Length: 264
Image (cartoon, rainbow, N blue to C red; front, side, top):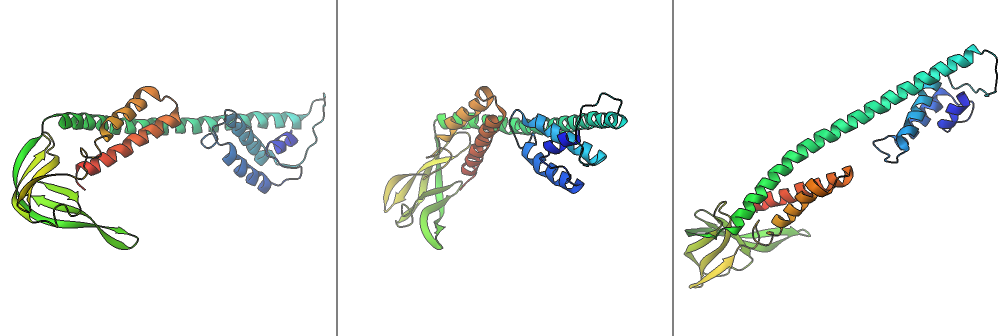
């Protein structure tokens, strides 16, 4: 009987309890249901746990199995320990599976709430994007250059213009290198007042300059993309791992949109 358990733990007769512990740690990591998705991993984990419990209780002293039809109290004791060990192993595997499913349930509960918010947010973005823009008469309050670090150097990238009620970002040199008038007209979305473009007096002439990028400029494709990802999450993906992956993609997309929405 013990040789059977030694074989399960890939041990030789004469192994000590320390050997049993080391073998169990190694094999439990290999066959743990949370780490090994193979269909037979769970049963193998139960088997090695049974072997570990039995050998740690009875001891790994080598014992040659022989057929014996006489009454053998020791053999009966082994069998009782074997059944107890198997039952403990099954209970442990069941508890692990129960904890895993509870973690998954909580994960999807939180993810569903976040993605519901992302859906509502994108519906409002789509509505705001489709409505006619509104014009706002503004005064130029300040102009500044925006630098980004690259390979240890500060590189001039953008022009920031602060209006009375808006802040907009334009490509480098579009504003800073020109004579800028004080009066301007800013076109913004109707609901969220996201700036789209501005009519500026540059070198004495009116010129329409577009926001270089925003949730509606350049990155407006994220709105239909997010609808696609949310649809895949809700209606298409059913398997656990792909569904979590799609959900994380939707959350990542929403984070980018929020970053663009609240300012650069």
